[in-house]
Length: 449
Image (cartoon, rainbow, N blue to C red):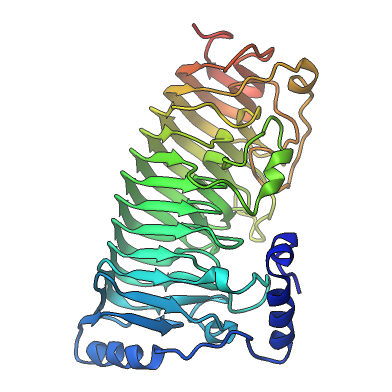
C-alpha cells in the first residue's frame, strides 16, 4: 500500500499504521456516524414529487450524498456538510472508482447553492493511494442543466470538484480551498457548455484543470471569466489526461497567485533556479499527450502574480497512443494580454514543443509581458535540450533550464510570438526566443528595450 510517501509518515506515523491495519481488516479506523440516510430520504422524496429545494442548516456528517433530478440542495449560511472519514463509505460512488461527499449521475436540473461549506476533512486521515474510496468534494457525472453557486468546497481527500461529461453547467462565485493532501486539484472540468465565473480556487495540486478520459467525448464550449486561481502546481491546465477532444475553450480576465507555500511538493526545490517554497508550476499549460485533440483554445487577460515557475507550457506528444489509429493534434491556441507582476521562481523558460513525431501548429502568443528570473550561469543556461518523448508533461520535463530565457520552440509549426516583452531580472546569456526545427513566423527581438 502506498501511504503517500515520507510526508504522511513523518507527520502522522501512527495514523498511517493504524489505518492500514484496519483497511486490511475490511474497515476504516476512523468510522463516523453519518446523517446521509436522513438527507438522502429528503432528496429522494423531493425528486419523486417532481423537484424542489432541500434546505439544510447546521452540521451534518455525510458521504456519497446523491443528488437526484429536479433537486436544489441549499446550504444555508453557517451550514457545514462534514465528510465521513471512513473509506468504505465512498467505494461505490456512482460512475467513479473514487468517492465524493456529494455526487450525482445522469441527473437533470440539479443545483447546489447557498453560503454553506462542504468540508471534505481530507486531512483527518492519511493518504493511502490506489485504494478505492479516496473521496472528492463534489462529483457530477453525465448530468444536464447543473448549477453550483456561492458554496465553499474545502479539504477534500482528493479533487475538490469534478464535472464529468456533463452538459450545461454554471459554476458561479464558488470558493474552493484544497491544501490538505496529495491530488488536491481545485476544479476539474470534463464537460461541455460550461460557464465558470467569479470563482476563487486555491489548491495544492492543479487549480483550474481540463481533463478528458473518454476518447469518444469532446470537452467543448467552455467559458471561464473573472476567477482567482491559486495553486502549488499548474494554475490553468488542459491535461494531463487527454484521451478525448478539447474544442472552443475560452478563459479570460483571471488572476494567478500562489498564496500558500508548498508543503507536500518540496521536491520543487530541486528545479533549476527555484529557491523558495512560495511557488507553483506552470501558469498556463496546454498539453495533449494521450491521443486526443485540442482545437481552439483562447486565454486572454491573465495577470500572473507570485509563484509562477514557468509562465507558458504547450506540449504535443504521444505518451499514450490511440488504439484506433486516429490522429492526435494540437492547434489554434491563442494566449494574449498576459502580464507578470513578479518574476518567475525558476530559470526554466516557457516552451512550445512537439514530441514523438507530432507537431503543434498555429500557436500565437501576443501583447504580453513576461519577467523571467535571470540565470547568469552560462554553463547551466546553455545546456543542450534532450528529446524526452513520452515523458509526463511539465515545464521542467527537459531537465534543463532551456536555452532561451523567454520561449523555447521546437518541432512546432506556425508559431507566432508578437508584441511580447521579455524582461529578465538581470543579465542572462540566453536569447529571448530560440526556434529549433520550427516554422518561425515572427519573434521578439534578441534583447527587448
